[in-house]
Amino acid sequence: EELWKQTCHPFAVFMVQAHKQDSSCLEELRTDVSVSFCSGSEEKLSLITWNVDGLDGEQQPERARGLCSCLSKYSPDVVLLQEVVQPYVRFLHNRLAADYTFIEGGKLGYFTGMMLKQSRVTLLRSKIIPYQTSHMMRNLLVVVFKGQELWLMTSHLESCKNNAEERMKQLRWVMKMMSKAPDNVTVLFGGDTNLRDAEVGLPSCVCDVWEQLNQPEHCRFTWDTVANTNKDMRFKSRFRFDRVYLRRATKDGVPWLEPESMALVGLEKLKCGRYTSDHWGIHCMFSLSK
Image (cartoon, rainbow, N blue to C red):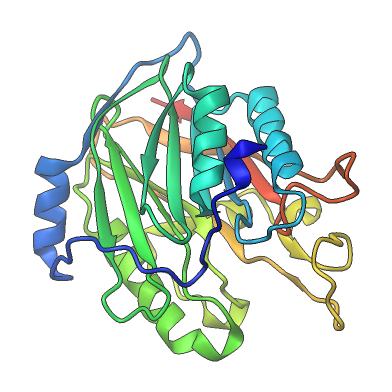
């Protein structure tokens, strides 16, 4: 319980080095960000993306234990987290540091993060790219699997309905980064986009993994205040805020990453009567096709 005594301020500002939002970012990624990927016995990649709602102070220790239990159960190769706070970081480190490498998109307030399974992924460097016009200190966190030529991205796009313009601007920037990656690179993005369907515009080279899997109804809504009672909302709503995007490599001879399955996680109530988060997490499986 000592991990939770430090108060987390949702509007605290963290400082990161700004980068011009043009092709120079791609050059930086090619040289400054890389991880080596160790293939397992099967040519598979498993991923969980989840907004863990670290800003909610209710039953945080129990909810953090629920998060750790879920990650231990699925043992994903890659974990993409949003709304992480320092007590969660310490909690995850204490329990999963033997198995995962941690990359944080910030230090103060709330931020994104990645966890990479050490038996499968070795991190060399990472890069944080801020959205320069964000009012919520949002950014894009990117790492690259060097051996398999796979880039990983996560972000928490601008929240709330009235911030649609900024959110769509951030989405366009993410899509630009994905589209302009080298043709021998596969790019995976997972995160809390806060997108309403009418706000979405994807380039032809990028696919929505949920749509690619024929829009399975059981994992349509990741923000569902009808089923998830963590937030006492007067008006109930259901949205597909959390999304996974894929841009395949186009160079001849480069293996394709193919979506195999998608499911929601965190659907079980904890003993404290709350769910791990007010969002459901997304668990995805991918295979490499030659």
